Length: 93
Image (cartoon, rainbow, N blue to C red; front, side, top):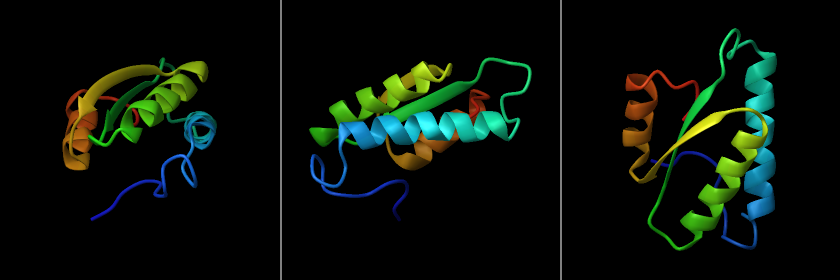
């Protein structure tokens, strides 16, 4: 299956888009009360393609700029990121 935002790296899917989406996601969750009473934590994984590095950096920067602590887990399949998000008690992954 597929998850998340999809597109051609550096064409449809840019660092600017990844940064903006991650900031927006943090703000939407904060407004919904997801982070009430604590500093939020995110688990961020990526795929092994070369674009994964710059997209991961943009997502981490966006989340951190919105006050989210980020745990970078490197190259992992999506189900592993979902598992770690739950098992570590993270707010978003």
